[in-house]
Amino acid sequence: MKIMHDAKSAVGFGIVGCGMIADFHAQALCSIEGVHLVGVTDVNFAGAQIFAEKHGVLAYKSYEDMLKDDAIHAVCICTPSGYHAELAKSALLAGKHVAVEKPIAMTVSEADTVIDAAKQSGKLLTVISQLRFSKDVIRLKDAVQSGKLGQIRFCNLSMKYWREESYYAGSSWKGSRLLDGGVLMNQGIHGIDLLHYVIGGVTVLSSVTDRMYHKIEAPDTALALLRYDCGALGTLEATTAAFPGFDLNLEIIGEKGYAVFTQERLTSLVIDGSEQITAVAAPKLGTASDPAAVGWQNHALQFENFVSAIRGEATLAVRGEDGREAVRLISDIYGEHV
Ligand SMILES: NC(=O)c1ccc[n+]([C@@H]2O[C@H](COP(=O)([O-])OP(=O)(O)OC[C@H]3O[C@@H](n4cnc5c(N)ncnc54)[C@H](O)[C@@H]3O)[C@@H](O)[C@H]2O)c1
Image (cartoon, rainbow, N blue to C red; front, side, top):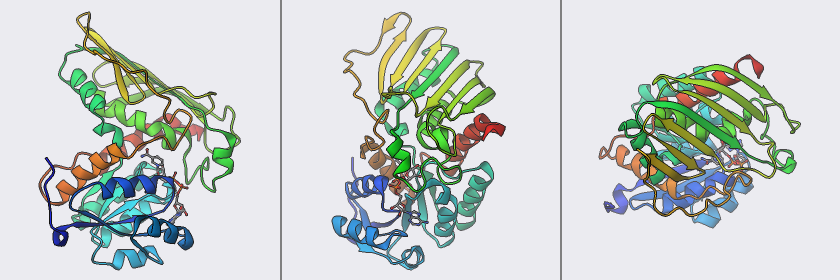
């Protein structure tokens, strides 16, 4: 049930970085009662103005101006990934709550400084991980954590995506080591976050990275062998060089059954030989080949939780520490290769 709040007590949001994902943030925020998107900013001020006009909000000349505005209680960080940590810290230390897009930071030590800034300021920090709010992910997690699948033995995650050359060539930051971080920091992080969220602690046994096709600084391909704290073994494959792009596929096999999660759907859940999934629509091609095929509804669910936590009415579902864990696993897979 949605709780209605009057305009006075609305939580005011600002967005920094007015590119592709910012539009999803704006749509998601505007769908929530008791939230007011106040304004936006971007290093490209003309871009911020166009975005602001489209959504009927203010365009601030600088990030500093936005942070000085008392009407802004929370900031969404939607810039290239390499800027997330610094911008998140500035907002937290200016007394704003922060929802930072994935990844929280490019290194574990940088992520720690953001988490410390949140502790110092007493403000909330969430890292966007919208898949965690999908009903099918919640059902998958329940099947694993409740023990319905029994002891988990194997977990295989495949993220064989395709990005056209123009995806990298048309961007000033995609494919760079410091601002993008390659296939795991950018595309693969959603699946990586699921491993930790659904199954639990995970250690990298061995890994390899490569630039299989794209002429970029960061790896476009990474493979890893994994061992989970629960005893399971697993593999991970991630690439943006697999034409024409295949849906994310996660197979979890336990002693009593198995689950298959394809793109955003639980397509099979078999417990003691009996299929638990009744109607399965064929999964449509999503971000496997189109980075903009994200949808804003799961972002809205995450923002609903974030806003409720700001109001003291809910526990924050995704914390800075969760974002840090994804970066830790990616850094361990990249190891010395990057
Ligand atoms: N959650 C998801 O599913 C999802 C999907 C896509 C992108 N993302 C994340 O969102 C972030 C942005 O990706 P995008 O595809 O929207 O990028 P984009 O290139 O479309 O937009 C980035 C915007 O940030 C602006 N910018 C650059 N540096 C800035 C700075 N220092 N201060 C203010 N503005 C700055 C640019 O001018 C641009 O308008 C990335 O970190 C990416 O990982 C998340």
